[in-house]
Length: 158
Image 1 (cartoon, rainbow, N blue to C red):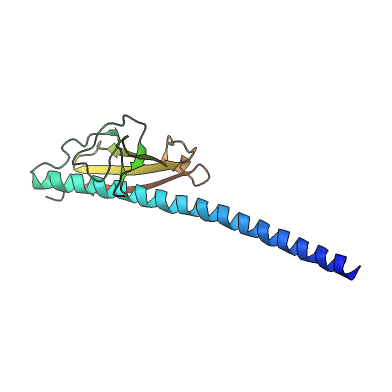
Image 2: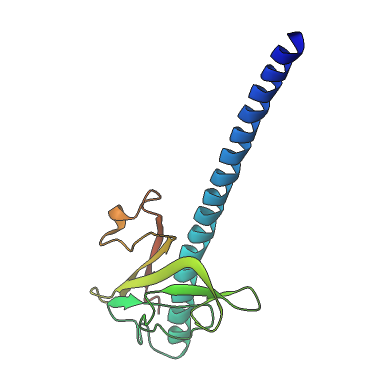
C-alpha cells in the first residue's frame, strides 16, 4: 500500500514537472519570435536611414523615398515595391532577405514612408510573424496580433 501511494505521488510530481517544462519551451519560442521581429523592425529603420544617407552624399535628400509602402533588405540601395507581401527569407549566409530562392521564414516586413512634410521623412517599419497581419495603423500593431514596429523621423540636415 505504501509503495502504491509513493508511486502515485511520484507520478503526479513528474506529470506536473513535464507540463511546466512544456509550457516553458512554448513561451521561449514565442519570446524568440518577438525578439527577432523587433530586431528586423529596427533593421528596416536602419536600412531606410542608410538609403537617406546615401542620397545625401549624392546631393539629394529623399530621392526615391516618396510616401508609400515598401520592402527592403540589407542589400538594398533604394526602396522597392513589395512583390511578395514583404515575406522574408534566410539566405545561405544567414541574412534575412527578400529573395524567394532562399529559405522562407515566419517573418514579413514592410516600410511605410510619409514624405508629406518638406525636408522630413517619417519612417515606420512593421514586422509580422506566423499568422500576424500588417495593421492599418501603428496602434493596431500589438504583440497579441504578432506585430511589432519601429519608427523614426529623418530630416534634411544639409
